[in-house]
Image 1 (spheres, rainbow, N blue to C red):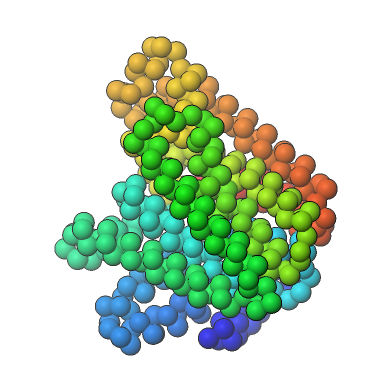
Image 2: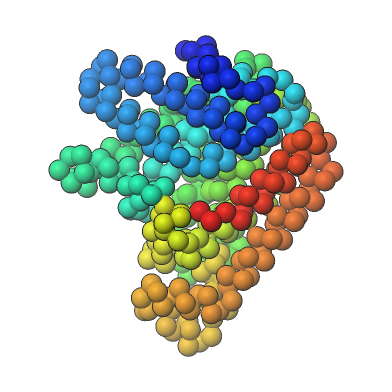
Length: 354
């Protein structure tokens, strides 16, 4: 199966160094498409309904997205390695399956209606079966679980000599993502006990870890390099860029254009999620603004948050973190090509419109 995956990508003429973002994304997409096609065939053989489950999972995985996690992992690897990319593609692609698992389960917990401009998994399954919300939720949980199993299978195709080191970082990433998600939903039940510092802890666990930090370190492990200096640089850079990424998400969750983000605006306000933005808005609000904030409609709450100055404060926090992350890279012992790419990624990941 591993050879099938790599041969499928060779047909796409993947360059030896996928330096261009489009080339890397194409390589990851090809690896995922080949792998998922084989999984669909296997499940279809058991029962056509299982093939349908696998096809829905495939469509969710291949529905677009920024592919940031394999991109960070790639540059983490390229920072210490100058070998052909094909042997590590399955491990890079596995991160997108973990991402789909997290998105599907997150959408269930938040009861989100859309993702990437399309219905979420639980809405898709509900519509397929008589608008049964219970079936939709149950099937979506199983699709998320299936993607996590598939991620393990793809990760296992990493070069054997690196697999143990890769796996330890991968496992840490998954534990941190679950821990961060738990704190995220806990915050919705006890927002009065939350602080901006605790919101940033959630960002580090839920977002920074599995978006930037651990993918970079997985890339380092794939390169077979035992470099404490590079590992430390990736750890610090990843935490800073990951926090900034989540802070941008906080702003987009309130002020983003649904036509661009693919998600409804205001979900964080509806659930009273204690994001850094909303906590800062409460801290900066006048007594009159604070009194109105809880009872106003979504449009008015958005105006109040803007008037407190909290969005400008969050923008400053993003810029400070990106600047600090770039400074970390300046002295990191990595390839210049990777340093330049990671600087560009820090900006692109945190200044995005969606």
